[in-house]
Image (tube, rainbow, N blue to C red):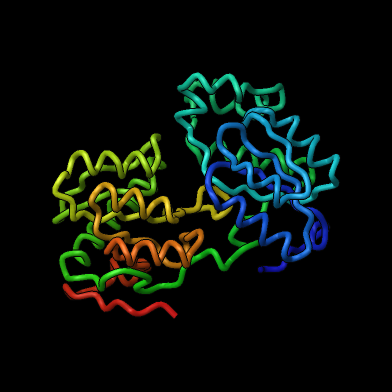
Length: 305
């Protein structure tokens, strides 16, 4: 675990928890390193398992920012982290929006972005505004990967069959497209086969992108490419895969997952790699130099340390 500096170095840490296993793993890592963990668990997203790990949990709508601040102040929290996915389509466009109605603090934070002459609801813009709110209140916002760096993956062939030249070619082509999509703040994931992009992740999320790929490419044999944004802020929405990703890719006929080394989280790593190997799905972690800097058709894949 990377050292936490400042007033919160040995004190309680706040956790804003979205969907998935990642918030639970981050909370457990913090607990193992002696930090009390006080959690805001987002309604309809966070796991009930957090109540077994954290010192205290308050369930809340994502827009109740004033309540979140009061909760963290009450527990003398001076540093927080965010982990887990928020399904923007649920928050904005489904009936569950009523669970997340904003309080006055939220309105003041987001009104300049959403009600201006050029509305800006991009993830990075919204999350940066939230971070600035906490900083103004004397609460630092840490990257979850600074608190639990072991969740990031090393470069190399991580699981499953060794990649063949066709897969490596798709990895290079898909990598460039995924990076461009991230730069436009559209999504982190694309699927590709034989140089043809099948699907691109947008507001619906990675799982829906995978499902759509299975519908569009019924013969299977495609590759999923998931990379960080060019200017990825590691405090927010770090690319993440886990056992559920493997199950979804396998069900939809995928053959490989390409991720970015040192900038992708793999949750429950042993299970993820074991499930991938059993399903015949390759997992390879590249970096930019390896994928985009190669001048030959063959890319050497190094076994991860």
